[in-house]
Amino acid sequence: MTEITDFPSLRDRALTLRREGLSRRQIRDRLHVYNNDLLNRLLEGEPAPEWTKRPNAKDDLKEKARELRLQGWTYDQIQIQLGCSKSSISLWVRDLPKPERRDPSEQARLACRKRWEHELVVRDEERQRTKAAAADEVGEMSERDLFMAGVALYWAEGAKDKPYQRRENVNFVNSDPGVIQLFMAWLDLLGVEPDRLRYRVMIHMTADVEGAKRYWADLVGVDTSAFQKTTIKKHNPKTVRKNVGENYRGCLVIRVLQGADLYRRIEGWWTGMVQAIAGNTARRSSGKV
Image 1 (cartoon, one colour):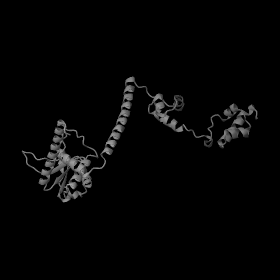
Image 2 (cartoon, rainbow, N blue to C red):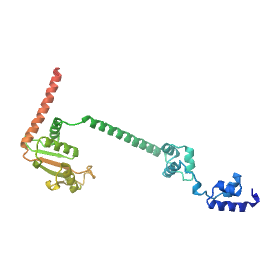
Image 3 (tube, rainbow, N blue to C red):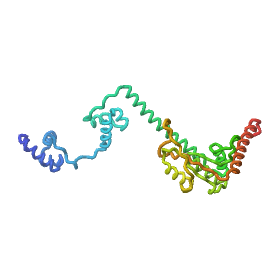
């Protein structure tokens, strides 16, 4: 082995070989330096060539840990998030500035908020599962199912005749696309011809009027030119509207021309449904069911 007294020249040779891309083992064999301490001193400060670096399975975790640390996360929080040891985290982020200490009340608020956010996610998942299971319970709708649903829907949402205001018109207003689809299917079941239907949009002046007309026209399968004049609701600056955003499309008004006879039948069907319920209740009370 080359004498230690030649250390400077030996280091120059070692660094030259390192910069040429040789590994530690290649430099060791080339210079016949088999003492690891001496080899370390010869190569001190000179980075290893890229090809000699082994891929580290924890590189992604390290980068994520550093990212979270820069966001102000504590070791405990990073450990819970990434599932790695505190000793590894400490090694990875020790060159980064420490996050500012939060007062206990702020930490409590943050912890409470995170727990609540998690609880909201859990609740929403449970809500969606319940809705999906309930939807599956409905199955296919028979014509009678649709008939009964349509009668109840109209009596709940449609225009009704009053003793002080005789208007036997079939007029239906709603903002729910699903309700409109069911109502249209019900009219079709009753044999109401499409040319007897008239459409109109009711919407706030600050909304996208033309976009709403196109949406409702596509839903009911007609051209926007078939729509009657839109009813514009003026905005009251003293009120804060919640029905805003891209999903706000106002209400669709559907009117059936020459609908007096149909209205009377609807009222009769509803009366029959109420009487049937009353009869069932009376029979259960008397024990005759």
